[in-house]
Image (cartoon, rainbow, N blue to C red):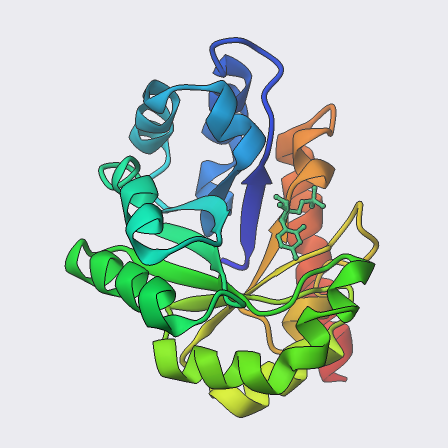
Length: 223
Ligand code: 3DU
């Protein structure tokens, strides 16, 4: 499976809309990524309910960027529910990502680092530091990295430098402009897709169509 669904908001107070969508698409996606607006609006009951119906990778997208102790305390709140957490890479190793990585390893959780972002502003700082970011990622050895489907040539660079073991998760498909399958073509393992599914009147059908388009996109790029 090559699609991770991003859920950043719910339209109901109890999050039942999310549960109902996940009931329909869980068997088609490799993972579920929960964003800050959703996590701040709801309590951990929602995570527990999501867990009951969706056993695939549950990724908590906190985009952490703090000192190690504070990141560990934050992640601790989610440790009974989450499989993976996302942190920024620019904060560096000493006193930050080293502590987070140790804690996650001890608790059987995966670390995903942001390597570059899908919006234009990522070119201003993140992409100017690609060499240093790659060096840091080699040093920290996270389970996965987030790289933009909107600038897929960056995916190629990271894949070449980091090898095939690291998972590349790529947002930017759909509403942000990239075509389904395009990031996969450049070496990503998963495309993270949010609004094209969650804002669709028929999320199940939208997911099916996106998966079909991913397959077609990959077939096209192999030609
Ligand atoms: O644009 P979409 O609705 O498909 O959502 C993309 C998701 O990926 C969203 O949850 C956002 O927080 C996340 N993301 C980016 O869009 C861009 C990044 O560089 C990193 C994560």
